[in-house]
Image 1 (spheres, rainbow, N blue to C red):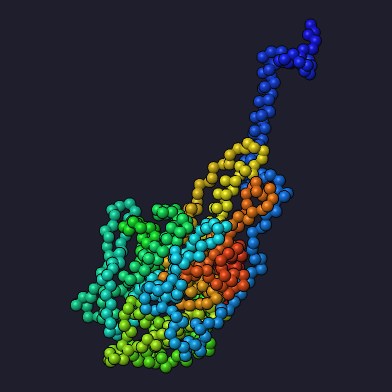
Image 2: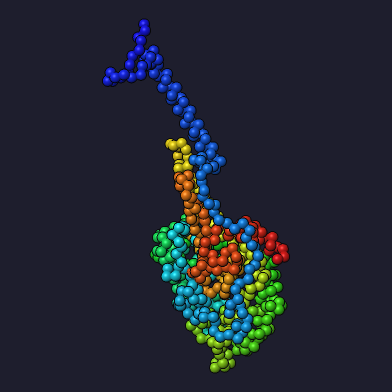
Length: 572
């Protein structure tokens, strides 16, 4: 029977006519329609999920159209020079002023205390809350790596005179040594006490007393503690970059195989993290046969190159300052009893520099003749030794055109490690940013949530590394960075690598929806201030595009230092 047309209206007003025969006639018909809708919906959901999964596997994203994205690419220098660039000419590397000048360029050699912006061989300037150059607001600090020289120590035994009249006692400190199994009884807190036995007829080399030669002195430990405290005031208090409580997953310390670096680390850590005395702290260390930090890895080519133009060489450029300073050398040999023909005391001013500076830094008197106590080294003579030592470091690591090749070979592995640390930190940050922004990029909404992050790799959270090293470590590093004015890195000397990010925001609506591209920049601090490099691509190393820095270091040492073993086996 035909029912004709009916109107679906709640008010009786006119409405479009609907054929009643086309309407569902019962529950069974309605079930068939909803069943079809459900099947289509499930199929669509599975299709979208499959596409999303494959996209994540291919490490690509489904983006809203980027046709109007005008974000500028991150800056980088494509054709960076790998050549040596000479340092500036100053009183430090001007031999005429070194030989005939007075004083030591306004440098400090007799106290750990002084202005934070003045070279102080006893306690070098470093990052400090009063002088730290805060970066512009647009730059976000992401990673910090510090390398510093150890603090004040006794002299090396090889740098002491054949007979030392003075005494040196180290009873104001304890050098803690020990060991314990990871699964077993805890260790006793043991420390060394140096003594001399009446039954031992031998005379120790160096000063009579209770010190090892070398060891970090009590004053040096105090300086180490304060150094750590100053770093904490900057990166915790001022910048809120480091956590208030020590986190081994965030912070990492490394030392060399020379025990004095561990002595400094033990105090610097407590300075950074008050209340952490008598707690366990891991110090990373590489095996002595391959240690890149000191460095002690074998590199015969670098040793040969240094010997061809630097200490011990017959190069006229090197011999010139030794010839002009020969009268002073003869005077000090006669006073100290050093053999005038001893090669290690005659090839450079290193031994006399260390012997005299260590005394003054610890408020000890300059030495006198063993046979005549009124015949002593004068301050003017000591200052000339210091000028000569500063000159030698500048010549060896910067003024000689061969210095860059020698430093790259002998310190390139550690430099490659720093670059790898920077790259790893950038990769971790970018991966985190990608996960956070993936939902914003997917279309159409709603979208499946991103998969959970993969298990973190070791050191993924590390954002602060601190290396305790030596003057030769920092000198080679300054050589590679081509510092514009080279000096002898004094006690506690410090170089800081700071990685910053900056959002490269576009004005387009599409880019604003996606978020800004993140670009990375490197800042290098030397003695607490921005390092000045002679390299034209760097100059004032305040906002160096990190890719420019990578190209420079990769070009010199290879990815992960891969070029260095071949350099060291060959001829530079």
